[in-house]
Image (cartoon, rainbow, N blue to C red; front, side, top):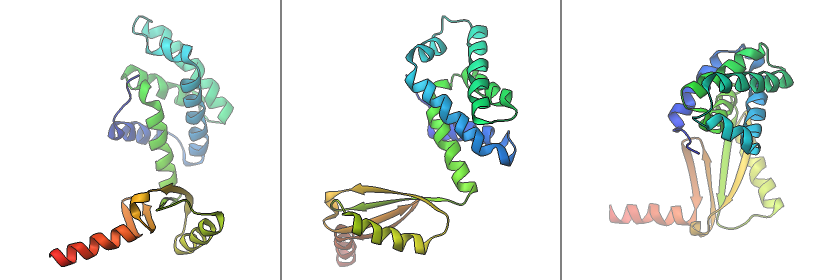
Length: 186
């Protein structure tokens, strides 16, 4: 199953984002997540919708029906706008990338809410007290924090690296060694 490029997914997500009123965006996100669940769990639906032998009109009918159902269940109004979006991404051969579009849509929504996703990477698994202490420090230093993702990378030797978007705060032993090395070698 061929996926799509992140930039292309972002363009489709932006189009969907801009086609609904602000108060509907949470519901649209739920509908998109529901459709992604159907897409990933129902192989028969995926096979039919990706099969080039199936008539475009049949695919359109199926997508409109599924799209309206998940949109209505999520409280999206108007539900047919969401369903038509699914038809458009299918007509442009982008339906296989619906999961990437959903991720981009969720990122736009987090950005609208001014929420941050932070990744904290440590050299070893941290116990719950250490995680709690670090999380408290990070939350006090930022506003709009949505979630913290924890990772382990033994190459850090010790300490932690905190990533938020394109910014990185390196408090690792490895980072300190690299900084010292660069300073010494000029």
